[in-house]
Amino acid sequence: MKGTGIDMNLLIVDDEISAIEAVQLGVNWDRLPYENRYVAQSMPEAIAQIGQHSVDVLLCDIEMPQGTGLDLLKWINENKPGICCIFMTCHADFTFAQKALSLGSLEYILKPLDMEHLEEVLRRGAEKVKADRQRNQASSYLESGKRALEKQFWHALFLGEVSVEKQGINMYLKRAQLDISLDGKFLSMLVSPGQFSEILGSSDRKLFGFALRNVAEEILQELPLHHELMPLSEEKLLVVVTLQSSEEEEILGKLLPECGRRLIEASDRFLNMPICCLAGEVVSLYEIPEQMERLMVADINNVFFYKEFLYAERSMPLAETFLYEEFITDRFLKYQGDYAKIIGEIRQTLAEYRRQLKLDEDFLKQFYMGIYYMLKGFADNHGIFLSNVINLKKNRSLLVKTGDSPEDLLAWLDYILEIIQAYEWDEAGPPHTIEQVKGYVEKHLGDELHVEKLAEQVHLNADYLNRIFKKETGISISRYVIQRKMERAKWLLHHTDWTLVEVAAAVGYYNYSSFTRSFTKTTGMTPQKWKSKQP
Image (cartoon, rainbow, N blue to C red; front, side, top):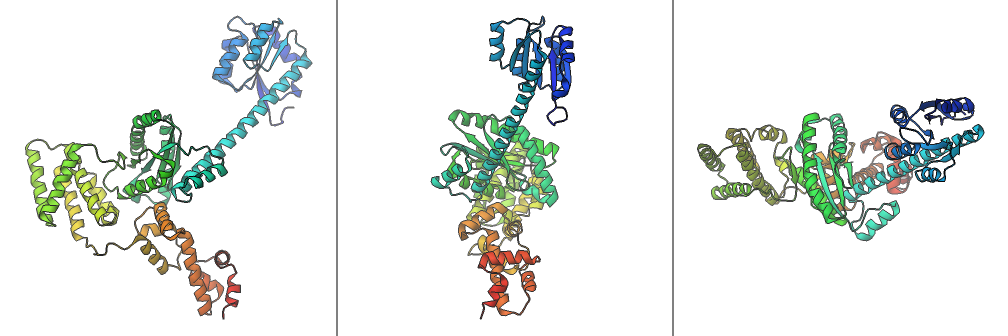
């Protein structure tokens, strides 16, 4: 039976070498699927063999001086479960048999051994191991499929593809046979390099995202709560933690910040990339999409903080931050746009703190946090994202030095105030994001238009843009682009004498069969048939 693809390893344990030799010589091994046979004469020797080799079946004497076969089986159950055990003994002791069976022994056979019976028992042992392997593999496949469906559910929920109504979510979970609790509590954490992702090319983003995911998986293994880790984009990750009780919430409150800081440190040290961990609050399942939207907005607006773990929806806890914010805001109100005076008074304040020896790294950091909150409120009031206004590359180079000296802080502040001063606000407010996207699409119907490319035009995350677009228009961006391309194609088919290939190219399709599929799906008929029906 060797070479059948189910070859296994056997360990024979007996304190009498003659008993081992009798088994070795008496069994017809050609009829059994055992590739290797190892031997031991005591429990310590058996444990050493199991440590050195992969053992599938154990044939073991019960009565041995340095630990009985029952002791060895107990050790196996605790340390190497999965090995099939067959006992042999000289004594027909019911107590031994009962104990052996209770520990999971396959068979209990008496010496002197009947070799034909032993061969049958060894065959059954191999079959049991094979059946257990197949069952475990099937269970593993089932679990993997379940985890994939669970990740798919979360991703669909974040993108707004699942109704947040209780009935809609319940139907989705039942259809996918997922046991996510409708009454459970959840916390989401967005892991993002933020503004620093701009220094990565497309291939580098994928590589960084893969490496970051591996690091995060290792660190989050220490979080003793059910959680899902999934990519949100090429370089961003999302962690969703499921909470079943207030005790678990307390555990999470203690461990999540530490996991976040370790992840930030690992990314900085091993991947050479600063990241920020933005955590939300504990919410119900139905509130997750709204919270996710707030996290993505916080990530887009995060042009100041890096290498930080933050609860994105909470105020900074330090009282000094609010004092600095109030101080800076008062100066803006007092001087009503006279930025030279604003800078002058801030310089005087920093000089006074330096004279009083109160100017340290922590002070500078808290001061620029105050400036950040003032600017965030300023941008919110005007309905813009900070990333729309600030040159992220230049801001980065200045920002990393703000904790080094007051001169560096002032250089950064000079830049920020110059940006605000130069920005001319339209009384009607900035163009609506959705209209900007639609306008860009109309001007570029002959190009290949992807969500990522459109998101770049309006400085938004692609997933977030797709979600707000669908929320306002009722369809996804990709579907909208196809519709507009097909409308242009119909106009060209009706008003020009262009060939079908030329029309396809004019709306960005250089594969004619792809154009035909899209056109047919949109209009219900092929381009040729549609054109033939026009007057």
